[in-house]
Image (cartoon, rainbow, N blue to C red; front, side, top):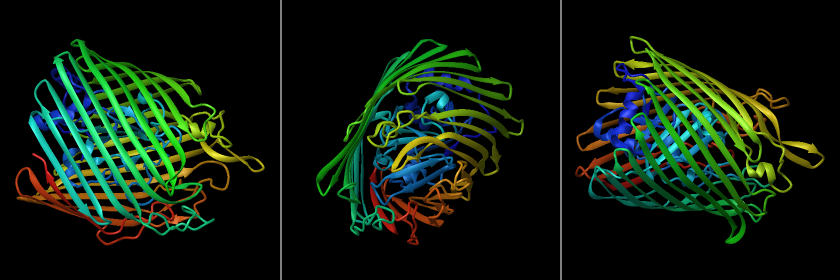
Length: 627
């Protein structure tokens, strides 16, 4: 795992990044390929929309690459993200069940999620289908904490999580194959081909996963949870595939195309009204071209589309559909102003269209965003300034900004400070759903301030980040008349947090520890004033340790979560819990290995959503062929 801090040996900010651009003329995702070959610091692109090494960015960033995903045998997005600094997760059951990510204590829809640069998720519900993102298709994940609306627009209040799909490697046509089986009658398989040279690359992959699952919900009619008593196993099936390729025509022109599709079919405990089966499709396609007319100017044009489709059934009887299609077009220009200064100017256009049953009063909206950013280094100080104006066909204009300053001392310590504003646009359901929507809703708004300190110790690196976020005009369901409840901009929250992390190599062990202390408070007037925000634990801790003994690799993860509450009134308490996962692998050859993972070793019984069960002790065996 790679976090952003200052190394003892600092590299010039912009020459390093621009040298990569000029040498490769590739799009951002390809940098993951370059770092494996050159042993450079990993390249982060999400924090500033430009290429920076992880130790240069002023943002609080964590990068999880393919090698780490394989080493830790992560099979879901919760496996990858749970316990990272500032990250809290909740799930309504096992594989395939709805999953939420809370970044720095903000709402689950206050995190912008991108796949290969394209925004994904439902514009009706405002949710991201984390449970349907296939980890076998992932090359790397970048988690950027803190407001980023000044670069990306709506939703980036808590931060941005960007997922990059697999990229081709230099070399002849190379196959890969993974076969796995485990508890709950789970089977997993994926296979792919990769080929590349100095001019181009191509990667293709197919995957399949199926599990019988377990009873997701212990619901009680008229009381809580899923409000039904349906004690059966809730299975899940997923079929997925990805295709990506790129070609460099010259040192100044390169193109790339990416495609991902994931089809899910999950059973859940429901009713004739809410359904008990959901068939979903997550699909993303993008095409981009990078042009460098002169050495100091790089221009990127990107066009993309994402689909989020949901079909709800009850015992095979169709009930409802919720479909989102997002079309996007972007033009970004990076201009060198000198050896240590860069200006970025860009424009984004996005059109969201939804199809639902029942139909909504409005089923589409357009948004155009104009943004600018300055990155500079003045001696030992780094500066980042960004501004953005969004013009939306539904709520009009909205401006956001961000400023960050960092200073590196002679002893390698780095002190940073930042301030930023952000916003979240209302969903289509909140605006227009029949009998529920309120077309007069305004965007939710926030400001955040952060202080950071980072450095190195004899065994690795460390960092501490202290922050506060205040969110106004939060949308909440309010009684506006007898028997009439509508969403209104009435709530506000205040979130304070401290994130500590360190990496170390001790006695051959690779170790990574993260601690998050969170105080997420409801600042709204009323009975819930000063209560904790729902489903966000006040403390989380994660420790990972891995070591190689010749052909044998061993490792483990300790995750500890404090208490949380399931409701705004703080009446339904969910106790804290601790999980221990163990893993091992044996390499028959450099290309073929057998992996084994035991999750929840002591069979801890816990909940992250009230009434919803979580996996007990599970075992997964995987045979992995990966030259």
